[in-house]
Every structure is written in C-alpha cells, then in structure tokens.
Image (cartoon, rainbow, N blue to C red; front, top):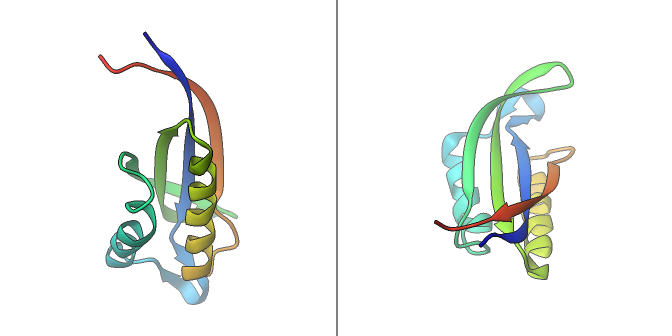
Length: 102
C-alpha cells in the first residue's frame, strides 16, 4: 500500500565567480558535511545545466520525506551551499508522490 510523501529536489549549479567551478572533491566534502548527517537516504544525479545562458555541471539532490524537519534540513543545506560556493540561489522543487516499497 502506498503512502503520500513529499519529494524535494535541490539543483546545485557548480559555476562560481571568477570562472571557477565547484570541484568534485569540494562537492563530496559538502555532501559529507551537509547532506549525509541530515538524511539517511537520498539520491544525487550529475546533470548538464544551464543558468543565464551558460552551461554548467549541476548536481541534483532528491529526497522523499514526510516530516517537518525535512523542510528545515533542506533549507539549511541550500543556505550552506550558497554560502560555501558564492551562489546566487539553489533551485528547489517539491512534488507530492505516492511511495511504496515492494
């Protein structure tokens, strides 16, 4: 039987000021420091993104949750990324999903 949950995705662009890019090593350190302590299960995908007409590698974080702390944790992660990597914003999407473990 499926349960109704929220699926949240955060889109982390890697382009930084001064033509710098968040390195894979910096991304892994960020995940270990900011994401892993907050969620025990999530997905990360590396995609080709475009922001303001400029192509950039983008990481998509996806988590399915149903608790209030989930929203707080997600906002904390986005704020930490913006601060750590001089980002203007982190895009967030929320969708209602039916979840069932088979």
